[in-house]
Image (tube, rainbow, N blue to C red; front, top):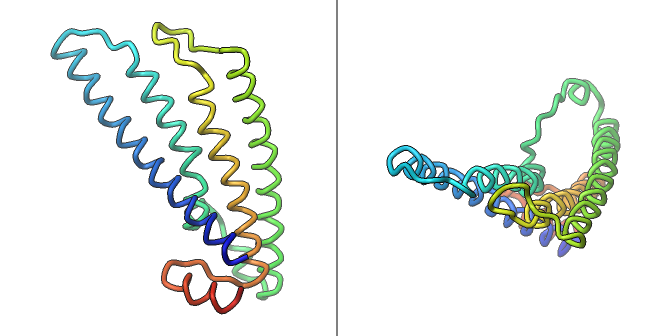
Length: 175
């Protein structure tokens, strides 16, 4: 379990870095698009699509990292007033529901990705980007988010603390 949790956490961190890089690339392309369009009076064929697909890809690929860092929005009013055993049960139930949702969405995104790849779908623009390229990050991000939820549930169930300062000692001792 120790190796599994560390591997998934590392992969989620890598996806977070990739997501941040995609946002950075989108910012640079927007700047380039402004210069080309307004200062050089040039045509921008691919920039708008690239920025849109990059931001959407960053959203999906960054979601496992956000879960790892407990960055999702939550309301902890009810757990605050529950005794610790019920807090743990509620956290597991909520994570299981989220896991099922992400697994179904991940499977559907795989079918979407595969259909676009198999049928040779492209965008309806001059760029004609193959659509499997922007659909792949959706599938990859949701798949890793699903597996990250599995790791999260294991951590909750076995009281493993995965915060950065406690990861090394807690995982070695508890798992």
